[in-house]
Length: 193
Image (tube, rainbow, N blue to C red; front, side):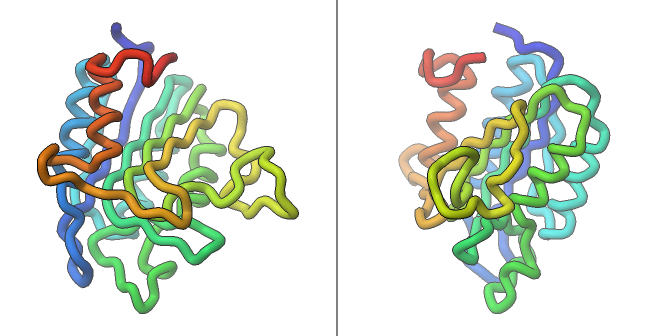
C-alpha cells in the first residue's frame, strides 16, 4: 500500500560524546527510513547530529513543507526537566541538559507554522512523551502539550517519566522494532491511515 505524497526526516543519534551511546539508534533510523521509502516517502536521513544540528534539520525540513504529509522519526537519548521533554544530539552535556538539547515543544512549534497537511512524529527515546497532551484533565497543560493542531500526531515510546530500551536480540529499540513491523505490514492493524 503506497502512501500519499509524503516526506520524512529520520534521525538516529547513537554515538554521544559525553554520555553512553544509544544502542541500535542508527539501526533504528536506517530501518525506519527503509520502511518509509518502501511506502513511497521521500526520506532525508540525519545520523549523529549535534543538538543544534538536530534543531536546524527539523526547522529546515518543516519550513520546506508543502501541503504533503510529513513524518519525523527520532531515536536517541531523551531527557526531561519534569515539565518539558528534550531530544539530545551527540553533544549532550548532562550538567546543562536543557541548554544542550532540543525541546520537543520547539519541534511542535515548527510543525505548527509549516504548511504541511499533517505531521506525524515518532519519538523512540526516554522521557519524550508530552506531559499533559491536549484535552486531558489537569490544572494546567504545559506549553509542549498546548495547541498541537488538528493535524498533529505524536507517538512516543515512553512517557515523560519512563525509559525506552534497546533489545540486543532484536538489534533495535523495542518500540522501533514494532513500528517498523507495522510500517512494513508485518503487524497489520497497528498503524492505519
